[in-house]
Length: 318
Length: 284
Image 1 (tube, rainbow over the protein chains, first blue to last red):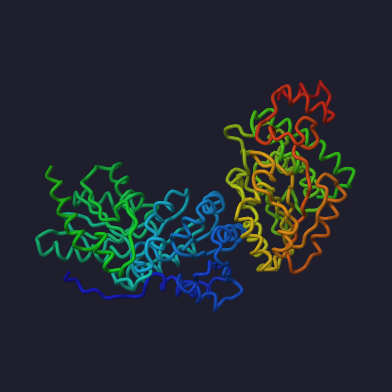
Image 2: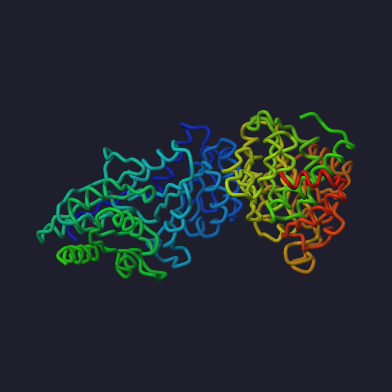
């Protein structure tokens, strides 16, 4: 692909930095981790504010319960582990101790998706967004780059209630700038277009931009949205783009079941339906490999988005 | 709340046993066995040991209470009703559509509950979080948490047990309602938890064992637990499931089955209610 790729910090690194900044401003922030602080990047907060950091040990269910107790006692709690462990090992606790009491707990889980790479399927969360969006009153976020990640963390800290945010392991291509305005619940229309709208989040936002660049050369004018908030979904922006472009591709590093694709499709079905194509992980677990190899093997690249866009545009004629 | 005497506590517990039977009889479903095994402990906590103010349920300095074994919630509602947290008549609405008195404790419906419990194993971790917040805020309130013996099958209880002693959570008292039964049968047959005391002491906890129906022993143990420093405290309360109603005692049928109308009458008679009073209550 011809679009120049400028790698920025991994979104997990942006989270770690934002936490330290938050810790300085807000003495009410408490951070918990489950023996993965070097990887989730909460370690820096722990060094700076040891009294407000607990490395709980490999004990996710208890960690979420403790987070709930701290939160209902007035603390704003960030709790981190890998996305698969956070969501799958402590889902019942997220349900009854966080979602049910609407506790002010921000789950920020790293190593989302298959770009985890060599560690393989047990460490690659492909169902975390589906699980998180199913929890009543949870806000669900998946930032694309370091600017997006930082802005969302800072806003989440100021917004009461439960949050889930997925961060990623690899360095993330820069798709925004310091001047981009982010608002939880509002997608960012990075590039406008009239023929089709590419809605993506996480690492797939860069792929979508890259696909739009290719499509442009072939005479197709694609809009690109960074839909960093999956819940609540930005219905107004989706409606605007449906009306304007009449076709959609949703691209995400998540299972085809229950992720951004499902949410966008549900939203569109309640408006005036338009053709939608999906670039996502089929109903399978991935495997070990280099992140970039896996993204190709599991069909999560700009080329696959280009293919999907052409299919969707063709379906407009049906 | 002013402290009730041991005699007053015994009388209150007897009245609250009647409340439990009435609530469950009218609801037609629920868990009598556990509610009756835990009621003496709850009475001691709410009317003697804990600092709390029904007129200011969110008082920042109140002692906190979590019923981790949420299915015994009729015992808790009886205590809240009699302490004046909500109108007594509410107990007649248990488990009905629209009632704040849900089948298991639900903080969305009753905001002064510290936790929504019913999924076993969770309350202790939440209680520990509250204790850590107290330490961060330099507050001296105490957190009390009741867990069950069947509940102690759950791995999360032992995660929490390790965590609390490692972090020297000494503003926490756990009371184990050790009634020796779980849903499907005796604990020793389903998943034996013995040696119970050794498990907790080896996990770094200060342990006491009491007769969970002897009010003086319960109060003394709760008071003693407040003086323990640098480690969390557990009181293993040996109880009788269904305690106080002869045909429910150690009869695990009444784990999760409410008394019929006849059984409700029989139980209330045994607990000292008059026939007229019983018919009056059942009409409400």
